[in-house]
Length: 608
Image (cartoon, rainbow, N blue to C red; front, side, top):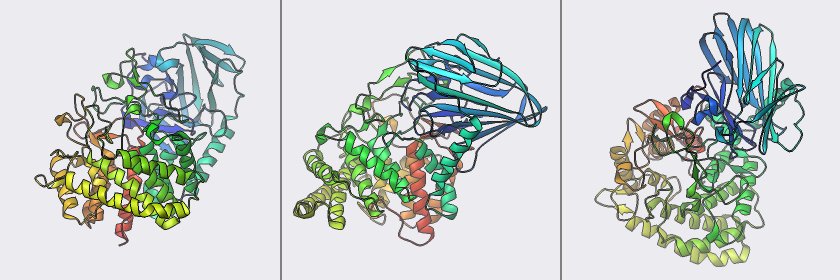
């Protein structure tokens, strides 16, 4: 049996499976080390990712030495295959979260490919982030685990040994053998869900993902580059509501052993809006419609009450607390649940939302009867608040400032309102009557940013008004149509970022040594910011440099094409929550921009 004090795998050594209710991380070693049920932001029942094996996992692997491990997705799906090569033979474990069944049915199929290999299964259910040991009770077809409100049932074709919330088995798997396993979560006061035919459920799940990926409007090399990212973004969507999780994990550190550990299992308006941009570009307008409706529900009421983030159902209460009993990923403490940033004030979210609505309309999204009313109220609110300091895109905890990126995105909100009225006739006569004032406000905001956000001494737009420190978020100016890449101020900003924020070829968000974020320690290179620098190269006609940086970023993807939030060059490791929507949506956008530049087209921007 495995040691109960085993450590989690490297972040990049995991595969990701999901069913648009929840998701799981499966290591190359055949262990599911992270699973929350019944949805992404529920308590984890497998939490060894941020602790030890004793905090919950489900391992299926050979009981002999493995000489080679091969892991891959089955085509353009979320069905994951892991093959173990041993001296005695080869076995394959196929993993998926079933589509179209309950909120959390984990499927595992063990197949003998060559020879005969002894295989060990060890399941340790620990509800409440690894802190609640359930009762284990035998059933007619498996073992039931119950603690408080939660229950799991394991159905397996083997004789199972149970004790202390554990189930174990060992079997000799010969070529041609097929051993199906099903583990399902359900509320403990209800009867267990029906047993599934694992083979049928796997086929149905594979068919769902193939049908979805087959709807992608992209062709050729561009499709091949972005498809795994689009699939990952789709799997982070919470199907019942249309909300999109920023990542499926909590507290994977931005510095190994550090304190920059956050819970990302919620719907940020910014991240979700940018994700919808990626979907719309891939031809997935239905996803944009679902999220637009989610926004209207979550943001219903006075615009000043709008939060920067919500839970996946649109709930507002995301109280942050620490799980001191858990050691954290590789000793990175604290482990946090919830996110206090939900109470922050961030100006940029309005621009992200209206920019996505505009882009979706350009790509065929039909208007919503409440859409203009919401946009009108947001516009009036932005006019009242855009001159106030805020907490910024990076959710700093060092005090509010007049962040340049925040002002930029407030300008975007007004600009997109103007465009929506001009190009689509939104609001009819009322919209037309608003136009002169909105245009004048847009011009005044533009002048303010150029005068106060640009530092002539640094020859760059800086992190905040009157400052001399840099922030990679201002690289988005050409993306959103604020200034062209040819503008000397933009070129100066790119040059300053290259000098001061590039480390080992990748881009930091900002210099943590300046203390703006109010946190100790440092962090790795932020992958989305590195993609933004590649975009700027393409916008400016520096295509060779854009392609080179883009390829270096693609090379950071793990063996399955997945990216975390950051990369630590000194360790050659991915760090931060995983897989990260922000990284994957930035990859998709950069692929489009470079593809346009290669074909001598005007590079894609979020204005077209």
